[in-house]
Structure formats: C-alpha cells, structure tokens
Image: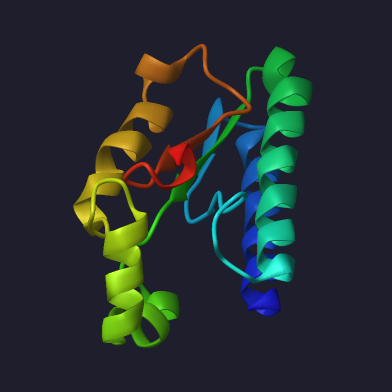
Amino acid sequence: MKRVNGIAVLFLLLGLVIGLTGHRFTEAGLGLVASAPVQQAAYCAAKGGVVNLTRQLGAEWGRKGVRVNAIAPGWFHSEMTAETMFDDPAAMEFIVRETPMARPGEADELDGALLFLASGASSFVTGVTLAVDGGWTAR
C-alpha cells in the first residue's frame, strides 16, 4: 500500500512538471478518507498529503496558468479493492451500509468529474480535490 501511494505522488509530480508546458493537470485515483471508519492511519495520512499538495501547488502555479486538481473516488472496483473489499461479502455490506448512496461507484461515474476538470468548464478551478464518492465524505 505504501508503495502504491508513493508511486501515485511520483506520477502526480511528474505530471505537474509536464503540465508546466500546458495549462491543466488532473490526478485521478486519490481518496479522501478522513473522518471515515477506515482504520489505516498511514493510508489516510498519505491521501491527506496528496490532497494538501494539490491545494498548495494549485495556489502556487495558478499564476503560471497551470491548474492542479484531483479526483478522489470513493469505493470503486479496482485491482486494489477487488480482493479485499469487493470479493468479501462482509466488506460489501460495509460499503453499502456506510455509503449514503448505498452502493459502490461504477467506473464510468468518474468520467464526468474527469471531463469537467480537463475541460474549459473548470478554467477557474485550481487546488481542488473533487470527491466522487456517493456521499462518503459528507457523512
């Protein structure tokens, strides 16, 4: 898990450096898990660091025309969640019970957030982590 979070930050920074020559950068695959019943302090700390890095770089690089934003998906089926959450009936019951929309997300439900952040519709948006989580962080 630590390696995955470290690699995500590395790709975030690489994308930001590349993004200096363009006008926008969006990082997907981040999670907002603060105040959630997820008992993984290191994971939560890593995600919180990436959220704050997104905010800080969005503020610092905005004057250069570079927008830095992130998407924070809730529970979506992935290689990381397949075995530990989606293949476990008790874990699936937890997701349904704890998510206000009472279900995990479908991959195509991330498309709108990604298209918004990558388009001119978000031309005045920077330093934001957009939660696509079925209400998980609103609890």
